[in-house]
Image 1 (spheres, rainbow, N blue to C red):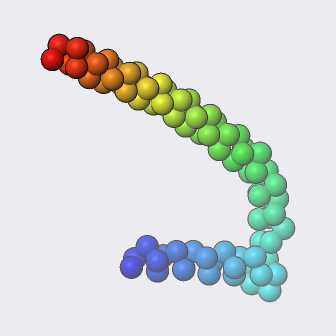
Image 2 (cartoon, rainbow, N blue to C red; image 1 turned 45 degrees about the vertical axis):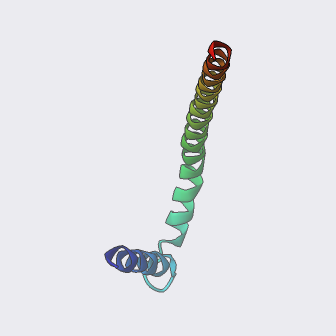
Length: 80
């Protein structure tokens, strides 16, 4: 409940800050967004690369475990 309330308060402040008759920070906010967009996209890109690498490693490990399990089952069948 606290998170929802604080989220609503922060969104309301953002709207008030953008209105020209209140704080009039609209142009400053746009300038900030223009400057922050390339940095944010670089960070998001790096995170996506790291997630992709980790996912690829997990898939390789799962495949190795599956092959080892199949080898164990085959060895168990042959010994019976």
